[in-house]
Amino acid sequence: MAGVYIVSDNITSPLGTTTADNFAQLKNGISGVRLHNNSMSDTSFYASLFGDDTFADNVQHTKFEQLLIASITNALEGTGLEPAGSKTALIISSTKGNISLLETEVHTPELNKRIALHNSAKLVANHFGFITQPIVVSNACISGILGTVTGMRLIESGQYETVIVSGADVISKFILSGFQSFNAISSQPCKPFDADRDGITLGEGAATIILSSNPKYNRGIRVMGGASSNDANHISAPSRTGEELAQAINASLKQAGLSSSDIDLISAHGTATIYNDEMEAKAITLAGLQTTPLNSLKGFYGHTLGAAGLIESIISLQSLKQNIIIPTAGFNQIGVPTPVNVCTELTSQPLKNILKTASGFGGCNGAVIFSKAD
Image (cartoon, one colour):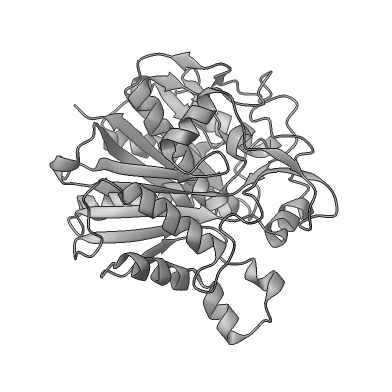
């Protein structure tokens, strides 16, 4: 089976437009979360947002599409890769895409087409000259991780040599009001796994990971395994046992040929909602990882929806490269009944294998493992 190497990556967020910029900000403890008062809400809210004029819609591309294009462009720089090849695929991951157009445009059949994710994927693919049909992965908040796992499987099956996985989401009144209707938005910057947590903080951004089986692109890190599962429990509430996320974790470990003791860091989903953090802690314990160092990056980026799995995976890749663990912003005191080892300060230690997890509405769960290549 072909090895799957990480060729290049990018994060485009309110913290910076390159992976290096973003990681430097995190090492300095800088968060993109700010208090906002704007037309998205009648009340003030915390979120990590771009400036009003950043990536504003233009005639050709929406803000969502511009984010994808900017992130892919940066990830491709210096790689020598040409998208226009029969063995190169594009995967777009998002939960909402252009849904914000419903707020500003007249509802017509043309608008329905413009909002469709496959239409945005084609526009982005055409911009770069892809000749293969783009693939859309939209499965709530595991979309970024599931896109990575899908790319890995397409390469391992021999269908493609290179897969570019890019994800983005933009926060709008439509999205914010939806989470507000659940009473899910925190009244403060979110506090993952903390006893004082009271909900999520939203964020927007984009990220890209380029995968390849070609050994010449071996930059020292591989995707070793990944899996998904579903709670079959509730449309919005997660499993109460964590068994299903644990299944995805264990399946990923099995594919990677690793045991729980081999994992050096968990990049958790860590949304800071009461039930998600409890479920995730139970799943981590069921998988035998309760003492493994763990962090959540939502306090820095907010919840970036379909981009979250990719943004947080890329920070994990930087942690592997630099042997640095980023702390969990907002965490003070453990607040889940099944305790996990939440990182509270910037830490330097040898890292070889990192597990990234995610869960989302509809009961979906995802896990992926990144390792330093031997």
